Image 1 (cartoon, rainbow, N blue to C red):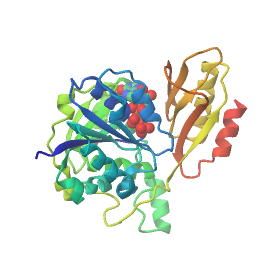
Image 2 (cartoon, rainbow, N blue to C red; image 1 turned 135 degrees about the vertical axis):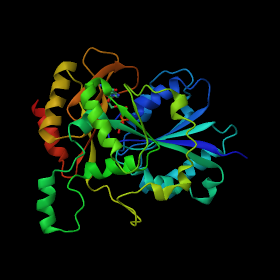
Image 3 (cartoon, rainbow, N blue to C red; image 1 turned 120 degrees about the vertical axis):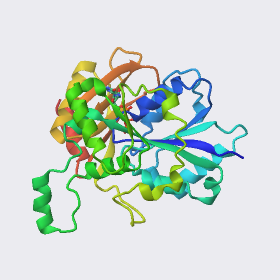
Length: 337
Ligand SMILES: Nc1nc2c(ncn2[C@@H]2O[C@H](COP(=O)(O)OP(=O)(O)OP(=O)(O)O)[C@@H](O)[C@H]2O)c(=O)[nH]1
């Protein structure tokens, strides 16, 4: 029996994983792809976004959501049973694509493919890491050398001062292919500089530039990496640790009353994102006089919004930031307008 190929799509919060996945489904050409989406927050916004995509060959039952925390930490409870259920379907999928949360470390997930019930029936075709090119160019994932030096004086074992960098590096170090996304937001010189940084890494993999996640499925699927057999070549900051905690990050949900105007709402969110250094916000709001809901996606203070089909009896917004981000303070700052 041939093994079902599984592609893992990873990449930091807001890099463009769901966008890439959406494009992949659109272009899948009749191939039956099952999708497993994992989110850090408790609200399944990505699943909603994909279901709301109105792509004809994207049947809802092929999108499975795992919203119960980080997939890499709930492997035994949630992930393995989900994969087994997909395999045991009367018509199993041709290919499975897993979108990890933006904070997931891919290695524990890769290890799960060594589990006996999964190992014989599935293989990891490839790990695809989506990179937010402008975020890298902004130095979002870089340590501040002065701050590290200062902290090392207090704690010699310290490796990073920037938890974002740790997640980012782990995601790159497990990759078989890197998609350098959001190329529309940088000029060629800046993109070349980001590529040079990637090329200098120990793990060398192919890097492809992309805009809005538009990459030919023939390039994404069929890498035949068998990544589960190749773990030693994929270093992680957490090698040696059985568990890892996500206590560097926090997530909560804001309830949103009906908004009087979309523009004023977005301006408020921009202010909140800047004042509190919010990493990611996504959700839906009702706007007075509009029958469609307003979908909102913020990566840092860069916000996109669009009216879209879908249920939204009440507005809700997932907010993700570094540990210490205070829900009450965010709510106050939002309310203050
Ligand atoms: N300018 C620009 N924006 C993009 C591009 N690709 C995606 N985006 C936007 O970036 C935001 C985040 O995209 P997503 O696809 O939701 O990112 P994600 O990696 O799935 O996010 P998480 O699941 O929260 O980690 C959305 O507003 C997208 O429309 C791109 O190439 N250029």
